[in-house]
Amino acid sequence: MVIIGWDVSTAAIGICVKRDDKDHLFDVIFPKGKTALEKWKYAKEEVADFVDRFLVNNNITEDVVHIVEQRLGGFTGGLTTKQTLMALAAINAVVSTTLAESGEVMHILPVSAKSIMKVGKLTLEGEDKKETVVRLARSSCPTFPYKEKKKGNAKGKVYPWVVGTDDMADAWLLAEAGAKVLKGEATVGQPKKASGNKGKARRAKGDSSP
Image 1 (tube, one colour):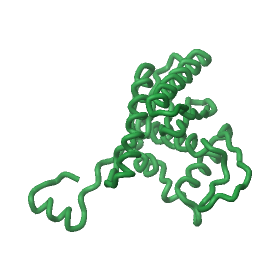
Image 2 (cartoon, rainbow, N blue to C red):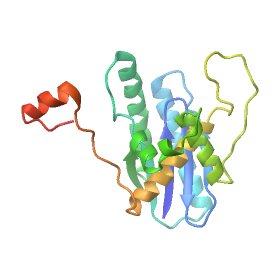
Image 3 (tube, rainbow, N blue to C red):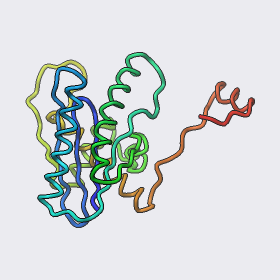
């Protein structure tokens, strides 16, 4: 079985191919275009091209499972957040539909992938989750392409790696988490129960929805 992790966003699409007894393969696609439609079209073409080249060049005959990051889970409101999530959902749908032509597509929430891979417990002091995932990908995969960028004067926290590095690391996380789910070693998880006064009010009315 071939498992391909896809970290999909409008800025970059990280890719990680996981095969038994083979080195991981990494790549990243940067959707181009002035409009959302142009970016969707570019992403669709580049994703299809990557899959076709990979399958042909490696004479793949095994089943292919695409693990795609699900972006709508955990939405809590807010106009900017809503607009961002809608844009992510749109390109996610375009990519997922394209991938469905070459194999099964499984969606995993970012929080589920991190939980399955125990990212929280493996985070070192002073690290954020993004740094942890990049570090884990580098330590686990000799083929992980890591390159640092030149130091700049940007404000706020600046990550040392070049653009696309964390997207490929997230794709690795998805591929590894997806592999555990497919082997029955982990589950995707269940929605969180309502908590606090809101949760109490719902339970009092007999509403068990999250």
